[in-house]
Image 1: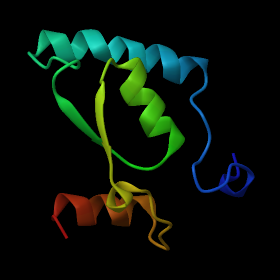
Image 2: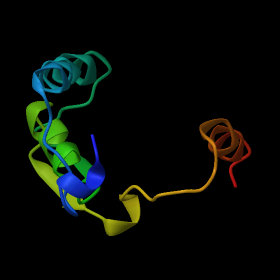
Image 3: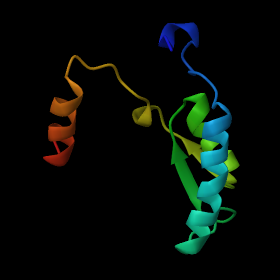
Image 4: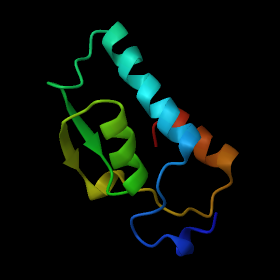
Length: 86
């Protein structure tokens, strides 16, 4: 989808994303993360908020520094930078 169509907040999750987010709740519990008591840091994008809510998190903290950015880098270049912790 074209990001411009959704505005600053971005698009909502689609059905597949909702199902995946709901499945995360069980995964978190399996590894000892109680989504009702543990805080979650999220970006300002709508889908990150929805993912956290469907995963069961109740203590959400939004940070603009977690928002996606547009980059002129190719995906493989960006991956290499992340792996090198740049």
